[in-house]
Length: 414
Ligand SMILES: *Cc1c(COP(=O)(O)O)cnc(C)c1O
Image (cartoon, rainbow, N blue to C red; front, side):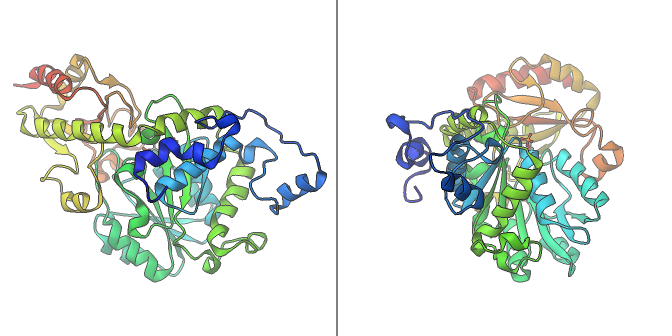
């Protein structure tokens, strides 16, 4: 698939790797248990000597395995594990690879629930330092002998900060630290974290990859770049696997099997269907986001606009160099925050809802909703003002979106 184009690979992948009856898509396998003619095969699946077998759906089904192959191929990795949600994938990875006394360095601009998980990790004795990762020196200076992992998001939600992804990758490689990158906002259609040295990549499949807002899912992918044989926290029983497989083996056994956040076959199928149009959708929604960002930036009622595709964005050059497009995520501030409720209510097309990476444009005021629980202090530290609105651009016709914002923003002109 690597030699083919991105979308060709997605739409023909299932058929080429094999389906029953020549189906062009993977079937939905609903069995929880898998039976065998010979008990030796059952034993082989349990012991991992019979490759590709299934025994109990919490550890995977043929349908989730097909989606895992698809994600691996999209990220050009060596393997992936699907979970019931993006948070399940992130949490299982942290909890299975980090131990009490270990140190994690993270960008301070991360998804709200990921930030909340850091509190849980601290309670378990894992030290977490958050830094402004837009400057790689901040990451470098935070590293200590106990640092095992660096975590960043490609484009931060909602402020759209882009870390110095390449430099951070070099720093992690020099020191043998796991580089864990959340690619949810960009998706492999716009960026492959492997290109900057990521060890592990997480995607919330709920967002860009499914695109329809009708299924939850997450995946962690091993890029094959990290040498797990040198990583101290791999349990002895997983050291028997080749170095490249040790990290994912531990995440699959200790994270997926034991913690139980398994993706269902029905959801996996729904995500795989959505993924077929990934590149087409992301292109259109990125075009819409750029058009809206340019429109908003010039509008007298609008203050700051946060979008990495604008020349005014502090990481514009990095986004241009690394990403095929600046994604569908943007945020902006009204000059007069008091007009926010009226403006949002006047919008006809954007759905007033949380969620990201949907075919429909979604809008949400950030401070009173997704960052409400975080509190005023955290919001201030993250640069989230009371009047900030987050927009997830959909695939609607551009002129319709601009016309709608044009009429709604009239309410905010003094
Ligand atoms: C939504 C999101 C997640 C979590 O994904 P879920 O599937 O909702 O659990 C993680 N990271 C980022 C950047 C997200 O936007």
